[in-house]
Amino acid sequence: MSGGDEGTNPSKGPGDATRIVEAGRRPEWTQGIVSPPVWRASTILYEDVAELRAAAGRDTHHRLFYGRRGTPTQWALADALTELEPGAEATLLYPSGVAAIASALLAVLSPGDELLVPDSVYDPTRGLANGLLKRFGIATRFYDPLIGADIAGMLGERTRAIFLESPGSLTFEVQDVPAIVDVARARGIVTLLDNTWATPLLFPAIGLGVDYTILACTKYIVGHSDVMLGSVTAAPGRHAALRDASYQLGQTASPDDAWLGSRGLRTLGVRMRQHGESALRVAEWLRTRPEVARVLHPALPDCPGHDIFARDFRGASGLFSFVLRGGDEGARAALIDGLAHFGIGYSWGGFESLAIPVDPERYRTATRWQAEGPAVRLQIGLEDTDDLIADLESGLARFRAAAG
Ligand SMILES: *Cc1c(COP(=O)(O)O)cnc(C)c1O
Image (cartoon, rainbow, N blue to C red; front, side, top):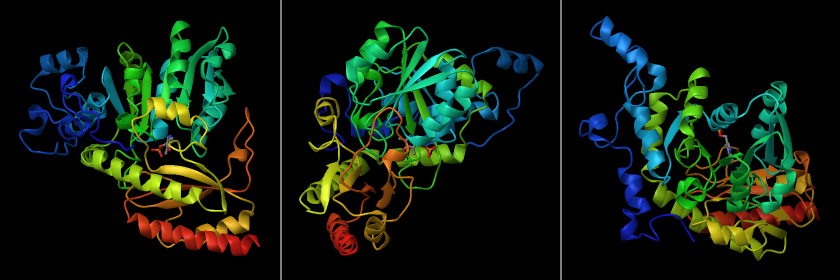
């Protein structure tokens, strides 16, 4: 499986690859220039007082008003992301993925509310729940990411929102998003999904009933490890609350960063297809190795929620983990430290491969992480896969030597 233009259905309009190339390129914003150019602005000048007053009173969506509300550069990327989520109402951009998560949660939660968050969540999201949200009187309960429809048993009078992230950060549990969404909808509870791993290409979340889908565009949308950017796309009827909260919080993304986001977006289809194909090859190779106990790649059967992945996703991206058999911190470091083609760094989704040690047991509170040995997370980049496999082969030899 891989992302891209498979499954094109003429009755549904253009395929993904076509939409990625064409999305957000409105002639009135580009004047015919192929890529939406960078419009930088703080001040917008008006003809006279009457025009200034009229501007202040009307909806500023797609109208120049004040730099913080964006220019055609940001609107072009936001609109493109909306077009990639069939059925979505609108998208707002943020200066990072974490800012997008924080703004979406602050848009829907009030003091006294309860939030449910999967135990496999990206750690800064946990930090927000246990920090600012808690201080503002919003309680969070963490749940087993594999809970599915049984989440109904966790809902209380005050449960206002369910956060989802699928697959989970570090450990890649695939959540039953449609089942959780069904339960939430029946109770009037808002759902928010961190869809950074899949992007709308591999998991069109709004069409599956999610209320807010969040991307760390820093990762695959930008795709070149050189920009921080986030987005939230809202289902019909959900945009106004997000817009009001985001305006009040002063959230905005710079035109230069949005422009790089639009530039990255145009190649998302081919990049995702290659990331997906190369990562699956590396994952399948790792699975054959005696030093490896388990490969946590959603397209492989060892991964919790693999059946749900096969049912709901249109392919896999390039990020997964594997668990070593035995060995300790030192043996894992020997594996990672000597890698020639993998950088050691956190923010993934760029063209380059990465490897980091991961220790899920440090973060969990609702479930227990038990493993045969230490774990490693890989981002498989766009290098030649044979080089990456050879590199990992030497790494596993170093691991064996150090583990004794
Ligand atoms: C990186 C990441 C984020 C945060 O994005 P930033 O742009 O780095 O703030 C959120 N969720 C997931 C799953 C991520 O991997």
